[in-house]
Image (cartoon, rainbow, N blue to C red; front, top):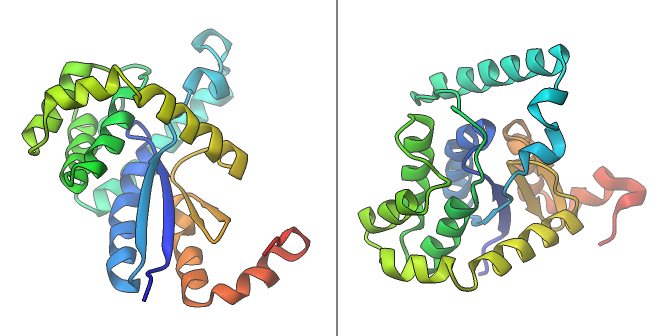
Amino acid sequence: MTKPRVRVYTDYKSPYAYVANKPLFEMEKEYGVELEWLPYTLRVAEFMGTVEERTPHFWRKVRYAYMDARRYANAQGLTMKGPRRIYDAFYSSAGMLFAQRHGIFRAYHDTVFSRFWNHDLEIDELADISGVIASVGGSAQDFEAYVNGPARAEHDRIITEAEELGVFGVPTMVFNGELFWGGDRIELLIERIKAPETVKTALGSRYRG
């Protein structure tokens, strides 16, 4: 019997994506679903504007968001230190795709999230991500060849496809074409997995099944 598939869009520099990992992996185990992990690499300046453009209201919201995410992290026994700067997470996203193809995804995924949020990894440095690949049993040389070859085109195609589906942030889970944004929507996702026929009622006129 084919397992129900849930696509998960994530980004290693998102605190909310980090704290969503535990409940998502628990959901995968308990409900027998298959998680398909894909990068949705956030372009921070695009949706937040430049630092000079940001208002006091914006910074209050940012401070609250990290405090809120840290509460979830503390409940899971995770360390979450605020990022030191704005990151381009392309290399870490490419690593996610590479790791899945080479059977080292979970070790890579957990390592990158943990080390980044402990200030022990620069996700926009190729050498750092290559080092993670090697540490979990992959080939740094093959990974760098992938990065310098088809990775960018594949990464950008995935982002475009995600946005065509309606994705705008992480974590976003997609089940049977329905989007669930945020870790606090995982319980709703579980309800849909248990009773997929309820999607028609939930979406109303927007249902396209």
